[in-house]
Amino acid sequence: MLPTIILGLLCAALGVLGFDISCNSNLAVYWGQNSGASGSLPYQKPLGAYCDDSNVDIILLSFLYILKGTGGYPVLNFANICDYTTNSSVPVFPGTQLMHCPDMGRDIKYCQSKGKVVLLSIGGATAQLNSDAATFSQQVWDLFMEGSSPYRPFDDAIIDGVDLDFEQSSQMNIIQFANNMNQLFKSGTRKYYLTAAPQCPFPDANLGNLLAQAHVDMAFIQFYNSGWCDNSKYGLPRWPQSMNYYMWDAAWRNSSFANPNMKLYVGATAGQNAGNPSSYVSPDFFASELQELQGNYTDSFGGAMLWDMSWAYGSTPNYATSTKQALMRGSKCGSTQGNCCSSKVPNPSLSRRRRSS
Image 1: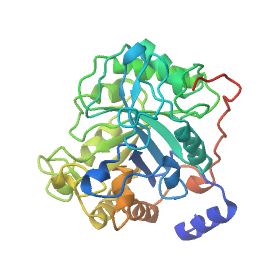
Image 2: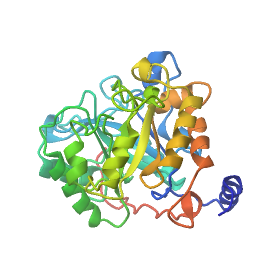
Image 3: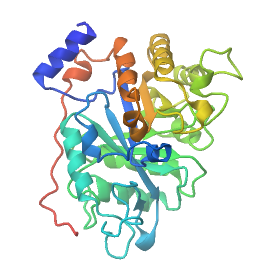
Image 4: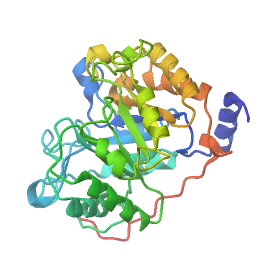
């Protein structure tokens, strides 16, 4: 295998980029909530501004936070970028609270052209999880993927799948929703992903049954805001006062998840006040933690997740850069091509379908 630095230079020279789920060095970052502004950092930039950076492999658009709003359609919120509640110039589709964000659509396609996977995260801490699985799964497919609807928030851009960040009990049957989405994915012309963001206590109260009963490709585990299993407890004696990746790995090895190949990601807050301050660890601490976990758990480990983009790129040092550099030191992929040379299937265009503005 080529050394990481040489491989990276070769990839840059070839100009070939692509996300590879088999790699243990992927970095996922949530974008959309501008949380760094609460810490006096610069406002988050438009999505496309981050996509020339090769450090990020997966971008999670946060959030679709109301499953069933006015007119029976979901509601999105992307803070300063596209939010009709604070910016009257942002259009909504007639009879709904569903925003039309064409600039984001262009950015999604640009990010995908750079090899990024772009997922829509559903939920969040203040979500209203109030729909039925059959209706909502079809809506998500029609509004954001290869289905057909006059209401397309991102126009002809097609997201690469959905992330479930359910931090409270849901009025929707989440397992049925996941199964429906996986069936719809099979009817598509490209690869889609279903991911989840459980909190670190195992099993997660809101997503544990989902992971056990429905196919989920990646789990972005929140090792923050949970006390005893936060990253800040890494290295302490085990149970009940330590970060508990080993428990998640044990469940993985014992085939406790519906997808036996689901990849586990270590989530962290990318700033002192991005979550509970006691959960935060420095970039150097996190880098050391990741390298040890990556080396010790060679099968289940998929990479790292950060909350969120505004913190990771708004502070010094850049948390995303240091995280990716740490992951790349032990990078291994299930295929011989790896992160560098895997191909990215172009998005099928929906431009011939009529859209409402």
